[in-house]
Structure formats: C-alpha cells, structure tokens
Image (cartoon, rainbow, N blue to C red; front, top):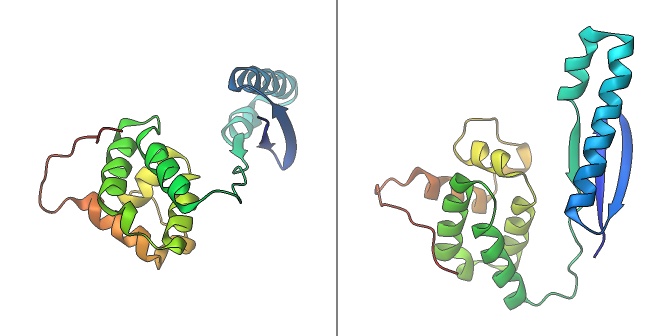
Amino acid sequence: MFRQIVCRQNGSIIKLLNSSFSSMFARYQYLASNNTNNTNNTNNTNNNKENSNFQISQSPISRSNETIDQKRSRLIYQSRKRGILETDLLLSTFAKKYLFEFTEQELQDYDELLNLSDWDIFYFVTEKKPIPKHWLDNGLFKKLQQHTKNEGKVILRIPDL
C-alpha cells in the first residue's frame, strides 16, 4: 500500500511516495540532512528557525467502502495503538466507553480527530494548547475533554483488544 507523505519546509513542498515506513523515514532523514547542510553554508542564524519549521503531514487514507462495524473496529484499534502512552490511555478508555453510542457524524469527527498527532490531541484535550476553532464547538471533542478531566478520579487502564 502506498501512502503520500508531504514534507513542508520554508513554503516548499516535497511529496514522497513509499511502500514502507522505514524507506520513508530514511528519505526524510536524507532530505532533512541535505537541507541542514545547505543552510549551514549560507547563514547559521536562520538554520535553527528553518529546521524548527520542518513538518511532515500525511494524507489520510480514503476509506469510502468501509462499513460502520469496520470503522468502529478500526477506530478502537487506532485509539489504543497511538504510540504515546498518555494518548493511548485517554483515547482507548474514551473509545471503550462511548464509541458504540456514536452517530455516523460523530464517528467521522472522531476519525478526523485521530488523524491529528498524538501530542496535539493530548495538549488540546488537556487544554495545554489553544484548541483549533474547528473543535471548539464540537460535542464529541467536549465529551473527550470531560472524559480527560476524570472528575471521578477513577484509575484508568488501557482496555484489552
């Protein structure tokens, strides 16, 4: 399966098509090191600023033929297998508690939320970073924030798959 990876730096866009994550990551390192080498020759004061603006964004995979049950199963798995324990814990317990009650629109919103990076999700729901306008009035996002507060002080454990 091919995924399109888009790297952005200083306004320029580089598209990478790769069949495996390891080859994509090697290509990313190569591009980042070449860019660093080029900027070192010109102006060292701009180097840190340029490298801090280097971002990788990934286009979500189109899943137009996915049934509702398949979507729920995928979202449960993606909620649990994030990569950062804090986000895994918040999203997996949230999904276990609420996912089967979601409407189709809420499932779509949750799918869109899961396309964000782990740290962005964590900082948005814990209100450590400003929440994007898109999520401010979203009922699902407010429910996730409420779940994150854990007002009952319940000990959370990542649910089994």
